[in-house]
Amino acid sequence: MSDYDNMPLTIILPCKDEGASLERILPKLIEKHPEAEIIVVNDGSSDNTQEVCERQKIRLVNLPYNMGNGAAVKAGVRSASNNTIVLMDADGQHKPEDIPRLLEKLEQGFDMVVGARDASGQASIGRLVANTAYNKLASWMVRHKIEDLTSGFRAVRADRFREFLHLLPNGFSYPTTCTIAFFRSGYSVSYVPIKAEKREGKSHIKIARDGVRFLLIIFKVISLYSPLKIFFPLSVAHFILGLSYYLYTYSTMERFTNMSALLFSMAIFIFLIGLVSEQITMLLYQKRGRE
Image (cartoon, rainbow, N blue to C red):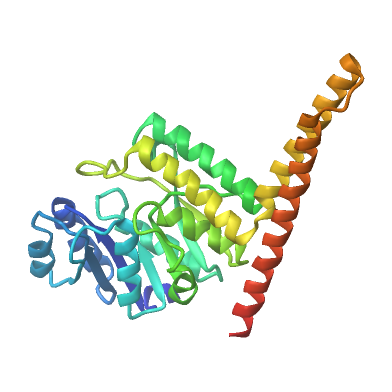
């Protein structure tokens, strides 16, 4: 028996109208992890979620109304009694059998281990394309390969995760925020390939609406942790535009135009804003390190 088989463990399942899949998942979790603290966070469900949890004698945290997936995760993490936490969706996509694989990796010294889905684990072609683009963008920003930015199946150390609770959005997507925050804070993250099942019920994610939100979340977290990653490319782009326009006007009219001056000025201003933002970020880090 491995060390992780006996570690104090909390399993958190944020849930909204997933009573049918909980009927199938909870008995498997109890069977495979009888000593684990299992918490279902009921995010304003209108189905039989509460009855299912009471029948299985599972700890239930009821939110007063639908507050969002991120809010449910935060409520579950605040309620957890153990420092090792597994977060998984309650819609039937994640297999309880994969939990030991995440814990085994976590025991190797990582702060967070994420279950990375393959192409077949994506809900649709549109989601696959969008998630691939998000993975590449986020990987470039944090300078680490991110294999699955939006996976909700992960094992974390609670003390590390709680540092970022104030950053997590109440809706989607908490995985995006915490993944980037972990990387930019120097915490170790690893990935374990998993085979996600087809979800039961209807997805609460809307590609057009939540896709824009995911993108904004990426930029928000990066601007908080590494502002120059955003401001410096923008500054370079304005400088190149200004230089190109100047070369064009000089070759055709032998003039240095106001537009070129504006673009050069914007390049300088954007770079200085990024530099100041970077210094503010460093001061915040130093303050947190002294606390």
